[in-house]
Image 1 (cartoon, rainbow, N blue to C red):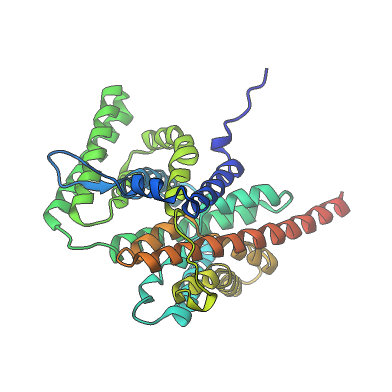
Image 2 (cartoon, rainbow, N blue to C red):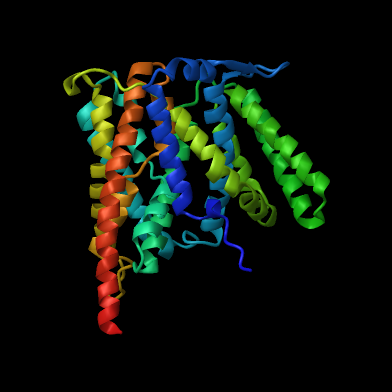
Length: 388
């Protein structure tokens, strides 16, 4: 009897879970259930003997999401060393397109919400959600050339790198460099243990790595650097074989639990009962910058990269496929939601409207990408049928 693959390791089902969790969070936040759930999310849990005292919502965004970033970092390291970004030739077109997919949304955001009260939200529309984008591609893109998926994966990975840099640099506060140095020491110990595990394969070493990883996370959180950066550092330094085993072991939990829980918590915002003209400029800026800014930026800069290729070589992607990648790139979601929480951490009203902008902009991009990817896939299937 054939055993079906775990759907949590696929691309379509995790994307559906993310969307469903966000929709449920938004719905429950605007029903009479809001009060009791908000009380739970705002309840604090402290770790005795440490300075860690976080609300449940922050345990999700700072703690659980660090595991997501650990998996992301492992994938980044693989792509940079053995995958789609391991050479200049492979990386140049998606790198130029990714630059456009960051710069143009920033420009659109600042054009709409560039005043002093909302300008800090400019990083929010720069992110692309890999899970959602690849999920839509898998669902509607049957018949598309493999190069489209490779390009989109490389583009989204570069977006993730940029998002990680933004989180580490822009949202650090009152950094305690001594504690950060201790966190770096813990990461170095984790690196040594992973090499030892690679050669010895003893289960006790894996347990020690888990303990050291938690210590590194705690020190990072206490240092003033966002705690998810610990997950990034640990994923980047882990030895390849243990890293791949860790990614494979954590993938179902990340896709089936961690990301949906984060989506629920992040989307648990009350829709303001105001007229459209009274909404924050941040809402409108994100709503426009995600779908429109990404399409223009990725398509325009991707086209520029086509002109820079060596004479006589075939383009990696033709212009209509670049547009499809640009539409998919507008699905910000996970990292954009985190950036919205960080950018407006001190202004709950603007933060909630920024989150609504992320949800709305990502939904628009999701719908547009479903239509456009379907049309491109149909085009390629028609060409294949003619050639058969």
